[in-house]
Image (cartoon, rainbow, N blue to C red):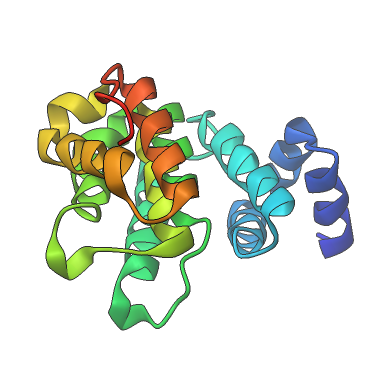
Length: 182
């Protein structure tokens, strides 16, 4: 399985081709895509979409494999891992949209990264969390109402313009628009 071929399939967003390669070596393809999450924005978003597309097929990516990947993502988000988890929250959100059965286990943990002091994230990772919970949408409201309240605070008063914008967007996706940024 050639890395160049994977790169070309990802650049073209050829999810059918990536699925075919994954059928011959799933973890090689997943590792490649996960590695692209740390790349520049355009490539990161292609990798997020590709991971979601692969995970949407339970014949290709079993629930056990998807859960293992989510556990690895959580480890990368942990300070002890030493990883810089750019793109990880976005991938988790996309996978939970495609595999809603994973939401019960992983959505509360992802949401706690917006509220639990010891798990708080900042900068690009915080914005990734906002995108992820917005992507998951309405289930967040019932699973993590405290996270929704925190996102409302961010929408109204976060110091970073992009974070405020993403918080407003996330609330709209959840069906919980804020009183408006202040």
